Length: 262
Image (tube, rainbow, N blue to C red):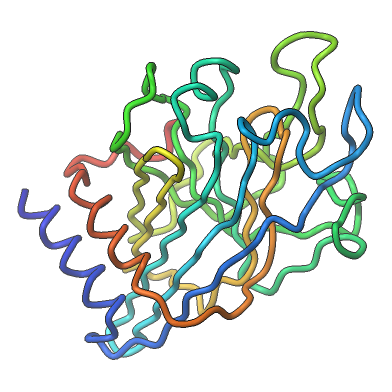
């Protein structure tokens, strides 16, 4: 309980700048398609928008150089996070891939030729692993811990066919990260995520020897890759939304961390 309260207070102080930090909040809209749709022509959403629509991702980062701490949060808005879609399609949420040196996808918007196999595609430096152990049925407010790793390309798991041979899906999108043997999490990084009706919240605090100067590219999808949200940081008016979601989600923070297991 004491550890949970400390974590909540720390995130609040960082988010409000009371620890001398400088930060930003950005909105990433769903202007990314991705390459290699299978059994269907290329488009933004493969399947029904009411099940696979992603309207955006709001991300927030605050770095306190004075205290060598940083906090990050992301809220992903999607129709995928509802009772019907969750139980009907038997797919799983993916991990959050992050770039620390800018966002450089292959091609131009809507990036319909971009995926892992393109030599010009973005290289990801960090990943937040959101365990594949999910509530069934859908449980709003479900909370779990997460892992934070420096990405090694050999550990990336890509989207593929999940249901049957005739299903339409998108290949070659970064989906999960499987830590390599003996690979440890980023020292001092603690993460968690919370599931809600209509959105998913992700939270990270960096307090160790590795604290990124900035986070400026993001990628997320679900196991079939029917829709992908990817983009760089674009300014939006100041918002306290993620501060509020952080407080809600961190209420469920668990004292025991379970490492990088999925």
